[in-house]
Image 1 (tube, rainbow, N blue to C red):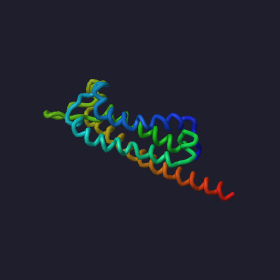
Image 2: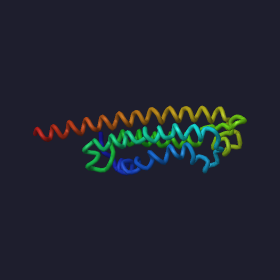
Image 3: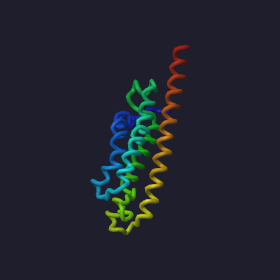
Image 4: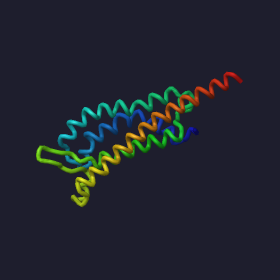
Length: 160
């Protein structure tokens, strides 16, 4: 698993993105035209869990000696991290919020003048959430694989 130049950006940005992206999904989407309703209130609680979950892979990468020395992440980890970030941005744009009188739409429905229905927007949001969850799990697995490889290579170098 190669260390990449784009991995340098991910190595640094993952610490900021782990806090900013869940916050953007919950509150920041109002800045891009999405109506805010009860989903924001519910999302604050789940957003806290999202922040904790988003910090697990970066913390794991600190145990990878090679990544820590070079200050850049491995290629597969970098890709999975980018997928998480993009999926969360898509989620922020497409998540349908609800009010006391029913759904109030998403940023996508506002941008398209309701040409994209709430149901379609909600379907895209669910797919984005699933992709983000799978990519986050993959980032955790890939970080652990990196730790194991780094430990093996350091043991091999010590024995030689």
